Amino acid sequence: MLCKEMVIQYMKTLTLTTEKQRTPNAEGSGRGRLYSYVVRVENLTTADLEAMWQLYDRYYALASPETFRSDLLAKSHVFLMRDDQDNALRGFSTVLCHAAQVDGRRFYCIYSGDTIVAREYWGQTALQTAFLKFMVRCKLAHPFTKVYWFLISKGYKTYLLLSRNFPVYWPRHDKPMPAWEKRVIDVLGQERFGQEYLSECGLIRHEVCPGKLRETVAPIDDELRLGYPDIDYFVRANPGHIQGDELCCLGLVSPVQWVFYLQRLARKQLRRVLRLSSSKREKRRLTAQSVQP
Image (cartoon, rainbow, N blue to C red; front, side, top):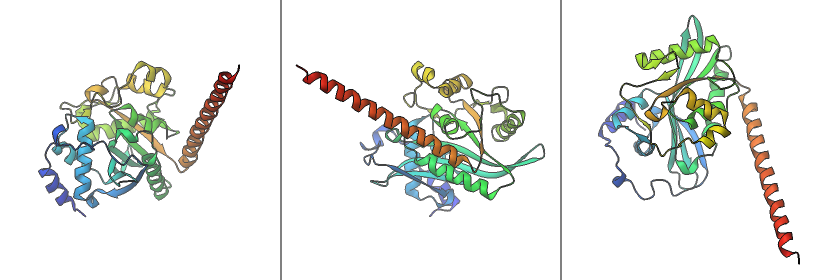
């Protein structure tokens, strides 16, 4: 286990990983199912830190070990995602939990930093499940206080974690943002990012970009925008995401989110079953046609 001082010392010695230094299996050899769990930052091991940095550097341009270190040390918890076959680290998400107050009204804030999942595991739901459990526990610990997830999003996949898993969230394509929630976003954005936070559009525009998604990671095309209103909204709300601009978002945490999440999973499973059934019927039809005289 590492104390915070040891984390600092280790990260100071961490040098930028280059493509030549990466192993051929850097994208993962396990290819199993992910499992996720949460640890405090001070309990990360040196192996965890090195794997996290290599994963971060693989998907983000303009990144440096120093930026990664300072962002990590400002957080309280990390969700680690591992392959259940080889136990290798294939994703992580950092958070900071703290009490906050805006205009005399108290609330509890779960602030998310970087979220990265190796490409070959996209679509798995281990992080969503672990994160939902964590947030519901936070809400149960603060039953009479509003609990918000404060998320800053460089890419649409991070935004989808909010729009697909929260019944109440902002900003969104189908509803205007209430004045109170806008005020919360403004205060949190200004406290953390100062003049880099632009209240009129809810974006963080860094003077010196600390890191942005590489252009080959989760590109957005017209088909995606036409098929998914929340992805189209993200592009319209954050047109500079390719340059590293970040959209500030807020989700209301509720104990009933388990119901919302399970309903969404059930609908997804039903669509999968229907597609499979339709595919089987089509194969039988084609087979029957091929054997006709």
